[in-house]
Length: 489
Image (tube, rainbow, N blue to C red; front, side, top):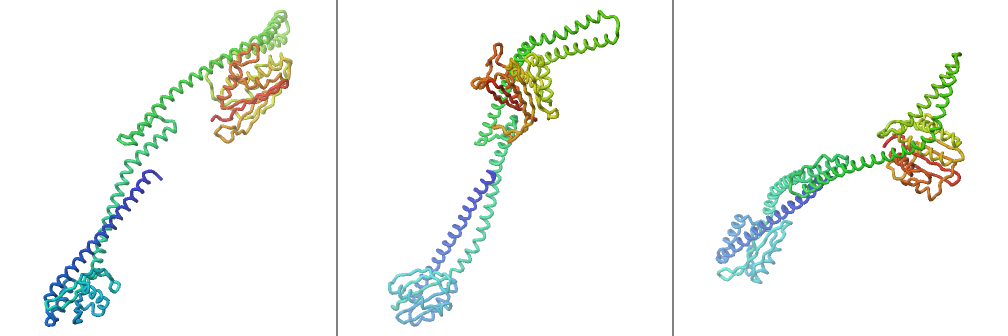
């Protein structure tokens, strides 16, 4: 439930309770006023009757007493009047009380005996009524008492009539107040909070160009201003991070290029003999052609040999140039098996020189990997070259490719499909103490190594959202496992 809705409901509930309580208290107050008014009327009637009765002489004016109480009862709309003379045992009363005066005679007698007025709020035949009793003494010395009764049903009717206007008024007030509360919460709470939520949604999507416009002087406006300042700070920080990231990437590219050039320099000295051999063959064949003067088939065969060897030299030079050329990272589908085959061809001379037997284990129809072929070739070149150099007396180089369903700790996905590239050798192996440092920059166990090859390799693999695992045992060899995802996240 939204904040504005909650606030509207709570305020509406409070308003309903307050106005309902006010209406209830108003009805009670009106009832108390009407009761007090009726009591005053009964007292006034009883006192007026007392004055009149004290002026009467018995027994000559007995008829006047009955006429008097009948007139007063009709005029004042009283329930009844009782006049009692205990000495003469005379009772005068109005007609409605003909059959029910006995319960009230005791109260009149007590008032005469105590010579003080009495006021009661009693029930007569399940109907509430007000009574007032006064003792009196007429001129001839006769003592009596007068009791005036009045029903409150007329008062209850008036109260019942006055309830409906009060209820209607309170209902209108509740509706009006709730409508004002609803409009106020929508304007001052719901709409500003919705704008804040829109700004937060834009921010969560990385869009920092939607400031919140709340031109008011309250806490929500201050919050919106703070949010806008935060968005500006985030824009500045994002630009700074982008610049720093670009600088870092450029440094990494330069570092990889340096390692690449160092690898080329290392390979160039070893490839000098391989390039010289085809050139010697070419030279020899050209000398034979010069000496021969007949036989066209021989000439064609020699020319084919010259062409083949020349193409071989050209390919070697092109590979060196492509590998040394500095390019921006690409994200293209590539076949890992083809890339590994090209890398092994590139290192064919070193493999033959050190009498290394290569075992390939992969299927050509494996899915493609998204990445930069030049960078990945550099990574695999470093791993395979390290494996070859770890077998100075020859051995077996195993290169395999397979698909794996892996759930790596720390990744968002529960499981993901990866290509596993294993480069294993039967070389000297790596000690446990050294194994923990092989990916550190400038750490090397070679006499002429730079200490950057494995660090650059790890950086390339991580840039492709993968990782490297190493397993090694001294005197038995090492296995480097590279995991690359089939799709880019």
